[in-house]
Amino acid sequence: MEAGTVLGGRYELLRQAGEGGQGLLWQARDRETGGHVAAKLLLMDDVKRYEREIRALRLLSPSDRIAAIHDAADHDGRPYLIMGWIEGDSLQEVLRREPLPRLERVLHWTGQICEGLAHAHREGVFHRDVKPANIMVSPEGDVTLVDFGIARFVDSTFTAFPEDRRPIGSYAYLAPERWHEHPGDRLSDLYALGCVLYEMLAGQPPFGFAWRYTDWTRLRDKHLHTSPVPLAQHRSGIPEVLDRLTVRLLAKSPAERPGDAQEVIKQISRLIHPPTPQVGDGSGGGDTPTAVGPYVDPGFIERLRTADVRIQRLNTFPGPDAPATLEAQAERAELIGLSGDVTGAIREYDRIEKLYKRVHGPRHPLTLAILNAGIRWTFARK
Image (cartoon, rainbow, N blue to C red; front, side):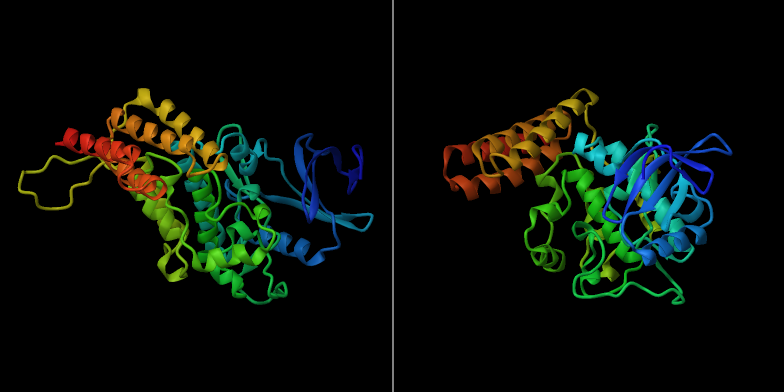
């Protein structure tokens, strides 16, 4: 296939925009409307996947959060889909450029991903492959879910993919039950969402990127039996409400996750728009809404973000226990306190103290210095 090829006498291929294991993505021009569309051509003879994506997209009513299908046919025996063209990059590409995006962007994207999932789930479609590569981010910062090629439906009239001992899906984002040959449902999609949210907050998926594993069963075992590293070890300033939500999304048992995407939307909305505290009568009765996160001096936000990025790089090399990495974490803890988040500084110093004890021992001068810094901020709070 080359530029200038016309599909169905209507869609002129302009440039190849992407390539994956299942197909080629081209930007094309619709000769009837003059507008740009996305042409997805099957790379392999995977008719079931092609038919599944067509059915999934045709089942769904229009949504701003899900790529719409315009046409489907074949060209010289190769099936293709025509969908709306989405300007922008995949979330995967965005995170490559900016591994730790600003918290407000993370919340905005998470809420919109949930809107797409909630819409699909209401109409009986489960995505089953939620990951950054299947989430498009527009120049305006809005997201769209794409690639429903392994979607599953509530009814059983469509033949499912054969489920063998090596499940279909993206292993860095695959829910524990999917490894046990469960076909996947809304709660499996929420686990994958939790993996994406963790990656946006930590700079990597809960158990690392799949390409780091030479044996896929090691990644499987981590999804099944291992708890992710706490987010606080990757990044400062994450509100406790968001931390708890991420932990719930990544629960091993589906029953312990949020019940549906709409529940997640409500929690994200409260983080984006915290309730205004109400003036009470002083009796202490009733439920008084409180702000979600600590006060942070805006002048420190960029410095904290720079510190987060530096620690992320140091965790990769020379490693999490290296002196430079430990020192950078101590500097970040001090910045957190100076920004106005005294409680966050105390919590961060307490965490770092444990690291120093493990690496240097409890009576090492550096460990004692960290202990004293934490005590200093504790007295500052009083």
